[in-house]
Length: 411
Image (tube, rainbow, N blue to C red; front, side):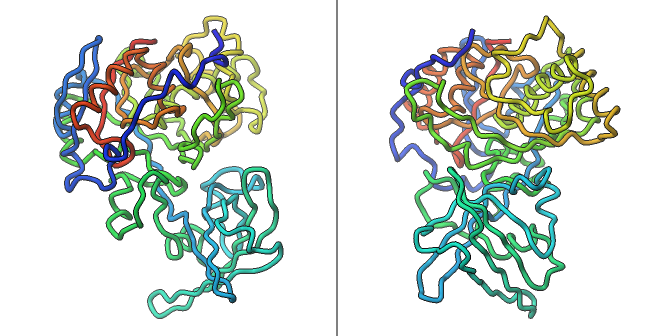
C-alpha cells in the first residue's frame, strides 16, 4: 500500500500552548515516561526506563551535535540580518567535511531580513576570543526556492567553520519555544554524548539520558551503538497539503560505521531500540540502502541514497534484513568505505512495515507532522489514545518535554 493518499487531517490534535515545555526540567532523567506496550499505557519516570526494557537489547543512539546555527549580523545602516545555517552547499560530500573547512565555506541558509540584503553586499561581524580578534564575513551568493547560498569567510583563516560557528552563533531553539535563548540552553539542548557537529535541532529523545541511566542499562546487558543523523530544520516542517502525496520530505545527512552495521546484524534476534525518530530513520534507511546494493552492487555512491517513496515503490523480493545489511557491507568494502556517508529522505507513514526497529524511545510530537506519522506507523491508531492520555495527565510536550517508550505494533 502506498500512503500518498493519507489525509493529514487524520493526524491532528489540539495542543494547547501551556502543554509545550518552554524549559527543560532541572534533572534530565526526572522527566515523565509514558510506556505503551501491547495496547496498555502505564507511566513512570525516565530514570527507571531500564526497568521497562528487555534484557540483552541493543540501544541505538544518534550522536549528532547541535551547532550554534543562528548568526546575527548588524548592517552599517543599523538593520539586523539573521542567518540560520541549515546545511552545507551541494559542493560538499558530507557535513563532516564541510564543517571542518577553513578560510571559506558555502552554506545553505535561511535569512531573516533578506529583503534588506542586496546580492553581493558583504556583512561583517567581529568578536574577541582570548584577546584574539576574529572577523567573520557573509556574502549573499544565490537565492534558491527554499534557501539562500551564503559564502562565509573569516580571519584568522586557520579556524574551522565548526569553531567559527561556535563562537559567533547561538543555539537554534525550535520555533515553538517562544522565548529568547539562554546560556543554559547551550548545554541542555544537547545530549550528554553529542559528538559529531552538524544538527540544527537536537535529537530530543536523547536529552533525557544520564550516566546513571546508562549504568542501569548496562546492568541488564543492554548495549549501545551509535549512528549519526544530522537533524535539519525540516524536522519542524508541517505537512500543509491535504494529503502527504505533495509533501516533500526533508533530506538529512547520515553517517554509519561498518562496525555499527556488524553490531546490528549480530543483534537481529534481540530487541533493537531506537533512541528517537532520527535513530529510527537511520536504521530503517540502512535496509533500503542495502536493497539498492542487492539490486546493483556497482551502484555509484552519489546514487546510494534513500528517496522518500522508495519503501513503497521498490521491489524487495522478500530480501531479509540480514541479506540487505550484508550486501551494504559488501558494497562498502568494495568501495573502500569504513564509514557510510549518505542522505536519507525516508518518509515513514502508516502502511510502512518496520524492518529493524521494534522499540522506540521518543518525545511527544507536533500535530500534522511527519514525526507523528512515523509514530502512527509504529503503533497504529493507538497514537490517539496515547496522546489523549498524555494531554489529560499533565505530560509535557515537544523538545523539552517528557518521553514515551513505545513497543511496535507493526513489524
